[in-house]
Length: 398
Image (cartoon, rainbow, N blue to C red):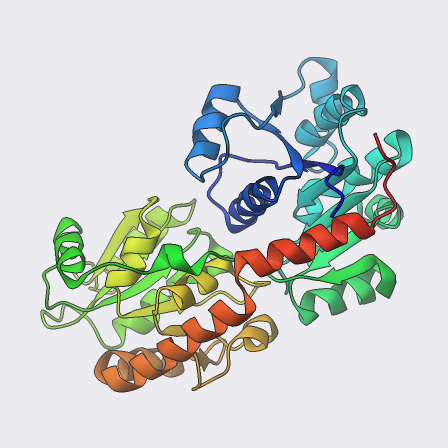
């Protein structure tokens, strides 16, 4: 395959641990290993970004370009445009390096729509936007509700290709922005499942002790941003229906951080579950935490293809998720996961109890989930689909 294609990954908040950023970096790593030239464009200090990329195994020789927040008069102008403190200096940087790349690839619609469209118009380079999530808090819905939606609707037509992870996302962008079929490619997230297995029983016991959890205690896990739309409060309220200060209860382990954390901790005190709920914060030990847990819960209602679900599937961790269109596209109820109804706390806690108390059933669905992720969502397969997409675009040789 022709290796001339050179791709810029422009990632706002590159140092964040959100799913979109991590997926973009994983893809960049795989594409680089396949022999394609990549550049990383982000915000921050080069040394700090290098350390961040090295944590994901990216070659330290990969060129990194950084942009800085506009100041002075320009700063007053950019505050009126979504994420313009990133895409305006990005556009300038892309113009300067226009002879070094063929394709611009960006995650998240609202982060990228202006930079991609203007790159197409003024620099003549094709762009790809991967749409990150669906539903009322998703990328398409946010763009449609934005005060500059009239301008977004104009610019969005200039973009060469949209990658949609699920049928739900594809339907949303077709319906809301009238995007034609030939500008949409369906590619799910990918994951290296081997990174989420392999702990011995001794390793698991030792790691649980490092968490302050005894060997015999079971763990129900949530991993994600602590924001209102993720509905961790809904999970805690359901949890309190069964596990109020119960010494024999499992632990609800909440991994992640965000603006909602303090309010969630207060809620645990109000509901008398503070001794059965652990807030762990952000960590790079997700794989180990998943391998020592007994069930995983995702209570949010606005997802595309949440990478954390693929991580749980890879870890052999039985999953409970909200019965949304996106989740139902990749998870089959009572086969490789359990799906609960959106606002039904009784349904959620009953499904948690089922997995905690019926180990044979939990093992059956987790085995099916790992089998599915290995067959359908391997990072190698997904990377191949992206390479085929890149080479199908009408880009100019350098």
